[in-house]
Image (cartoon, rainbow, N blue to C red; front, top):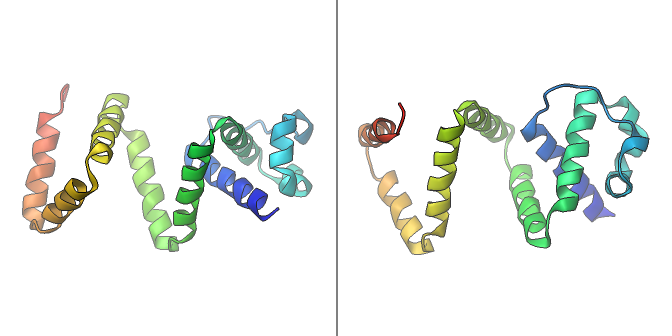
Amino acid sequence: MKANRLVATCIALFALMTGAANAQGVEWRDLSDAQRRLLAPHEQNWAQLDPLRQQQIARGAERWIEMNRRDRAQAQDRFEIWRGMSDEQRAAARQRYQEFRRLPPAERARLIDVYRRYRMMPLDRRIELRQRFRELSPEQRQIIRDRQIRQRPNR
């Protein structure tokens, strides 16, 4: 049961991060059987939730149901990291996420590609790059950022 609450809370976190275009709400009876089983701990409060929140949670539950075991484990790991953050760290993460979402699609895709390539590097290489970046002065870091901006296509 504790795992179900963690899953439901994780889904709620996903929902917060994704947002929704309009708020028409979702009736409990309109959820799939799988969604209702997953969200059972929230059934009593479902009708009191904001319609936008209902949509977000329903979408999050659907995504969770469609995830494979590995993706679920990664999502739970991210949720544990989130739970360990201070309010200030969470606010900063939300702000960065909103900034990312406001980027043009091509820029978001480029950043995702850069991050994937970074994650594919051997761990020792990633550690080395992070250390080298930390040792740079603020001015040197800004020069690198500016150079990256100038090198972006279609700017």
